[in-house]
Image (cartoon, rainbow, N blue to C red; front, side):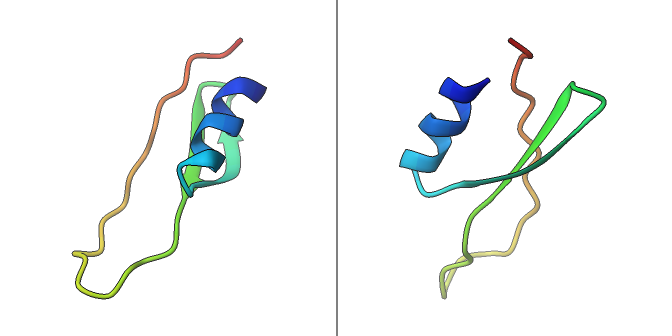
Length: 46
């Protein structure tokens, strides 16, 4: 899991939390001009 967190961190995402060890939540700052969206990324558990 640490490799996934580092990969997303390198791309500007922040690891927020996980739910039930299955769903892992990341976020990144909103940039002006972007359409606000909610993204859930399912990262396989290690």
